[in-house]
Structure formats: structure tokens, C-alpha cells
Amino acid sequence: MIRETSVRGQFYPASCQEIDEMIEGFNTLLDEHVEDKVLFETQARMIIVPHAGYVYSGFTANVAHRILAASNAQRVLVIGPSHRIYVQGASIALHERYVSPCGDIEMDKSFAQELKTKHGLIFEEDAHFEHSTETQIPFIKHYLPNAKVAEIVYGDIDYERLSVVIKESLADPQSVVVISTDLSHFYSLDEANRLDNICLEAISELDNQKMQEGSCEACGKTGVMAALDAAKKLNLKVKLLDYRTSADVTKDRDSVVGYMSALFF
Image (cartoon, rainbow, N blue to C red; front, top):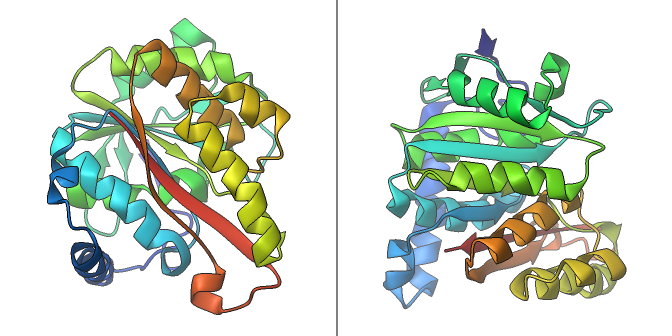
């Protein structure tokens, strides 16, 4: 049972060399602009990251994944929304290996089976041809090369059910969680900034009421709310890391997509 790639060469480079070169470029820029290098020693338990093409959101995702490296985690649970098919509930992958351009990653199948049984998850293999989770794998392989991976792709599910899964995963001090989401889609730059700021404020305040009642638009909103709920119950702190839009790359201010990353520690 192998989790094959589905967006290799589209959302991220097809070759390991190209991926390493992109990450090296992101880190060169990061080192030039981050004065407090202690940030990279933070013991992260969970991150929120975007999942667009690396040319658009790779820098934003890399900030969080680079910090996650300091955790030396042995297991990474990646959680993202389904974009391709309708999923009733959440599907957890029961594969044995996850293919990546820089080498396969072992999947923690026994852990996945335990979560599936205990929390009423399903295994819908078609759901796992999904870019929201797959785009995180090259970063995980780069920064946590010895870690095992578990993958959840969700659809119609209450955020509190996912929160329980996150808390159970984080009960193991050698486990970390990656939550995948993009923000608003296809608004003008000014409107995108306004809508995305609602999301950023809610995340920085661990405020799910603001997430629900405000105009935060995020394709992974359920996963973010699950993360905020788990963080509050586990007494985790949160730090916003980076925010930008596709306009930073395309220069098109009329129709943009928002991206952000955050750290829970």
C-alpha cells in the first residue's frame, strides 16, 4: 500500500534537487529578515501552513516547517481539507509508504489504524490524491527525515471531532501536527486583506467564536478551528509567522489568494 504522488511537478518541483534549491532560497531570504534566530529553536507542537504551489506559498509554509525541525519529532500527523471529492467525515490513510521526490517516507500505519477504530474515521483512498496534504510532504522529508507520517483528509465533519484526534496525537511528546489551509480566494487585494485579517485575529487569540461568526474564509477552516480548540485545551501558545497573498508573486491585485502560517508551542 503506497501513497503515490498526485501533484508532483505541479504544486512543487518533480526533482529533489529542485526542491532543495527552493528551500535553500526560502531560507536565504528568511535569514536576511529574521533578527531573532531563537525563533528557530522553539519547541513546536503544531503548525498551520498553506498548500498552494510553492512559487506562491512555499516561503510561508517553509517558515513554519523550518521551526518544526527543532522538535525532532518522530511522527507528523498532517491534516488537510478534501478539494477533489466529497468526504463524509474524515479519511485517514492506511498506506505503508508515502512517495516523495527526495525518497519515500514511512507511514505510521498502526497509529492510523488505531485512530480510525477509536474515532470512527474512514479510509477512502481516492480522498488521498489531495494536494492540501501532499504539498507538506517534501518539507517534512527535508526537515524531519526520520519521522513517520500519518495523513487525514477531511470533508463534512465537526471541528470538535478533529480536535480530539489532534489532542490524542499530541499526547505523545514525540508527535507534532501540521494543519493545512489557504485563506480567501479571488477577491481584490484590499478585500482579501480585510477578510484574512479576521482569520489572523481569530487564530492569534485562539478564538473559535470569531472564526465562526466573522467573515474568515479558509478552505481548511474546520482544521484550523480544531487546532485552536486543541491548543486552548492543551494550554499551547500561538504565534503568527507569515502572511502574504498571490499578488506578491503575480502582481495581480484584482484576484488574489491569501496564505498564512502559524506556530503553536
